Image 1 (cartoon, rainbow, N blue to C red):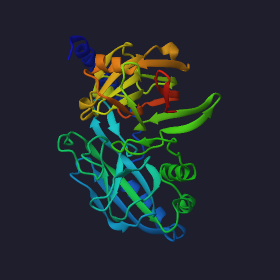
Image 2: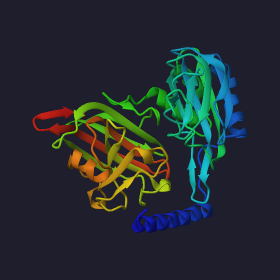
Image 3: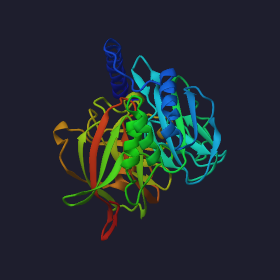
Image 4: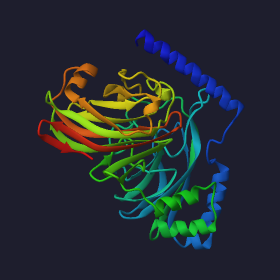
Length: 391
């Protein structure tokens, strides 16, 4: 690590420690509490006659931070069944730095021993099962997967996380919306039922032509909107993380450029983002056929032109960040960008590969639990007369 970056990291950690002390002196709620209070309240709601008649199967589980593997729900699901997950509690990465995570970050489900993993889009949300089999659940931070079938990557063993999450899983006889309306009529627990009902009534479709990166799971961070000049992608991240991927197949020539417009209204972090505890940011990225990606980001405090390798495990092997914007006076304004991708790759990473295979939108607000809001429009890969429209 260069001397400047090392000094910056120490200064940032000192500022975080100061904020951690302030948080202890002025404690705030960590969100809906798990444990006995959650279990008693949710059990009472589920026992209501109008709710019970809508339920096929249900389970309430406690997921410890140091769980070694998947927990069994002790029942099976069928393809097409609608499942609601309601969860509460806190996982702590560092109490000294006030680094904690709630269930919004990572409640994962898997049907069968070899099913495809799926993450709920929030701490109170519903989904339709695509596969059937015995149901398993785990609380797992993103990025620790070896594959899409839920095997854990031994290179990233979980260590130092404490706390637990309480999770209620409901399999409905018919549809989740009908069941949640009955559940809301029976009562609530710290607003979680209301959130689940709102998500069922107003689901956020994944933007057209894109998919969420499986490693981080689906979410409701991005949505298609129609602006004054056509289609935009609206991004709103709040204590979560998501990468939206658009597949492309474009040769990485000397002249290919990534062009786009964006308007960042709010950044999720006001500290340097080049260490793990503060790595919250908004960006657009290009993925290449060698597995590397180069991401152009807005920074809350790093100088424009700063280039650094991602500080997160796994991602430090594949991702490089380039601070493109950081001036506070430019927040809230539409800005046009035009980047020579091959030249940027050579400067930031090394010998360029052959092709561009995806364009990403990235939003992270996990570590400092802040909020980020931005919009993207007119994303294209341009090479002479050839234009590949992304958004």
